[in-house]
Length: 329
Ligand SMILES: Nc1ncnc2c1ncn2[C@@H]1O[C@H](COP(=O)(O)OP(=O)(O)O)[C@@H](O)[C@H]1O
Ligand code: SF4
Ligand SMILES: [Mg+2]
Image (cartoon, rainbow, N blue to C red; front, side, top):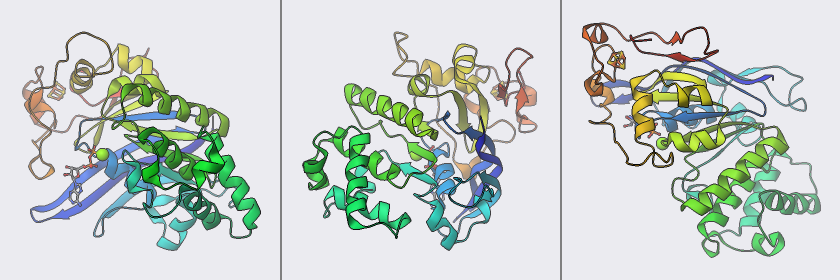
């Protein structure tokens, strides 16, 4: 599998009244075409900030360093890779939607409430294909809705977002995100607000589209149980850093970082009887403990946990590409 996205040492810094914070801190990951990487962590771990940095949508004043190499489509630049960290706004306009697209937890953040959904999808297609005739744009709009399993696509295209159910709105948002044929889809908690049945349908839809379109997917959730359903590999994030990473089955059956073990015990989706929440709370980025950031909540902490941030180390020989950031590994 070819490397579609290769991120290394990605760091995002934001100014706050109490100094600079790093919601994304030295993150390295890769996603191949046709592969889903699950990104998991509690609220405030930096998942959204990481995805916004890959879309060029960070808040003003943000500083970004490190590298994020994207291999573009053949039609879009003869195989030259682009470092997203170095793009200017003009270059982002071609990448955003054209190469990388994003769907959010709340469809209304991406849908315009006063425009029929078909017109919005047509706009997304035209933004990346100015040469197309309006007949061809219309044809592709309906095809995009059908591909996302929106029933009666011609009729639905004329409706406004508020006329659609939550599940249908999510399908329309996915259709719009994929309308211009991106290669990488970032899905940020796309099913968190949906009930279990609709959630399952949307997960199945994303999985089918990944296969059909050969998409690379970054699937963000706070629930390791959802990751188990959709991802090939998983990265666990805490206070901006990746603390464990590996093939999904390996990480779920043999978690090595105490934080990953905590997330597993707290997952509402994995049927394990009673939920066991992780004690304490994610620390403020302005007041991170020295050494391991999970130390105040960790039942296995020892003296050397506070002296330095543990390195991300490979987990024994058997676990290929499985690594964890803990002194016990
Ligand atoms: N504009 C901002 N300025 C400073 N800090 C921010 C800003 N937006 C979010 N943060 C902080 O960045 C951290 C990561 O947030 P976020 O990426 O939204 O986490 P997640 O998506 O994992 O819930 C949080 O500690 C949050 O408080
Ligand atoms: S480094 Fe120490 S405090 Fe941190 S997770 Fe490992 S054992 Fe717990
Ligand atoms: Mg988020």
